[in-house]
Image 1 (cartoon, rainbow, N blue to C red):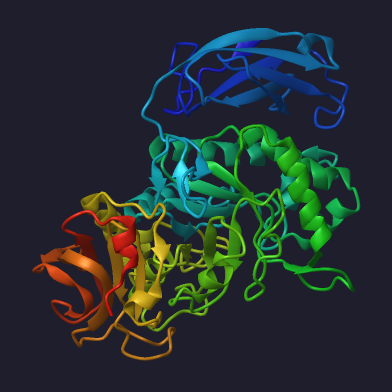
Image 2 (tube, rainbow, N blue to C red):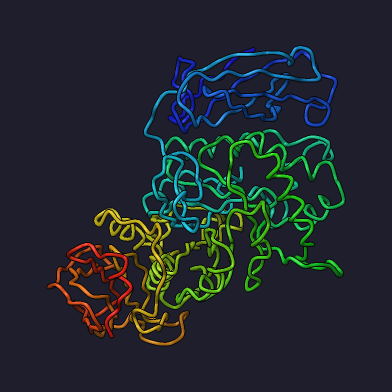
Length: 530
């Protein structure tokens, strides 16, 4: 028996049996058993006991000749203990202990305790969702994966979509020996790339899509195929303890209730079965969802296993899809695909994606950017994962994500979060294609999109100076203008309550922040002046 000492900043401290809180712990057990199939015939379970006596059971996972490992997400400070059970004698009844110390790590992605439509890290810090699409980040044939993730962090991304596919629409590379075993080297490379990101950029969360777009594999799962079911079981055993991941069953499949299964069609019951199986097995509360075809909505709003309403649509710069789902369930709503810079590309990428991000946030939702064709293998041109800034410099991308860093700056400068803020476009005339508003009693955030035309895919930001009429409650408000194109602030004089027409400092799109100069009582906040 041995305990792996992980060098990653989120694993065990080097040379000790001590781990940081909200990192992960890994143990390694060895066996001389070589005749049995390690994926299907050998069972290893580890029970981790926290300092408070609560216990978590996890599956061990095979990681090479005679080696089985298990991982714990270290969510509690103090002394942890563990004990193994197995149908193989030299893996059975092993035990050990390790210490978890306080740390500054943010930890896993959670649903915010005080607002179920917002995300938070496990340390309670609000999670600002700035999504990016890096489908092939963990694919072993992608050579620019380090440049991709390092520059995605600089660009401001906090969530990355990535799948296990190597082929465009299949995950068969996950298997070996006629699907009787797993292609261990491929899984280990996935692990290496996730741990690289965890060490370098622990604030970035990966949405892992184990079945990718492999329609046939999903259908095999429904028929009870052992290898199809092994994918999810092994993936959870290996990766669920990592602080920087959450699960998405599949990508861009058409979910149907029945009928002939052609094209990308998958039965609803199939995804529901996988979701229920994964949720029942999930040891560390890792969030789980599914992603389905464009314009098809989300079929699992009420499913107990589903934590996130995941959407794919187009031209959602007015946030109307979030309004549609807002009252269906109080859960995070993520628009994970809209346009891409290289697929159904808008005419003015930088403005479109800036507008999409701000409009989504102020609608109570979250959005994701798409740049290169990361669903295709790297070709040195516009396909595969590559560094964002490298691609911009080479003329492959047109600055579509340049302004995401300014979104971070806005919230850092103001100290605001969107927790318990309510979307309210009626305050600004109920014209969501032009104005978006979200607020609580302490702050009103308004986006003046100022498009130069009505078609989202064609519009650019207007050079004309925009105005907005705001219907405020009684009181006096401090007004500040934030330029989402460069991150600069412009102060304005105080604004009295009532219906007020306010003019931006110049042309372009703007964020208007209004804060009461004296705290409003809840009753005052409801008395809007007409």
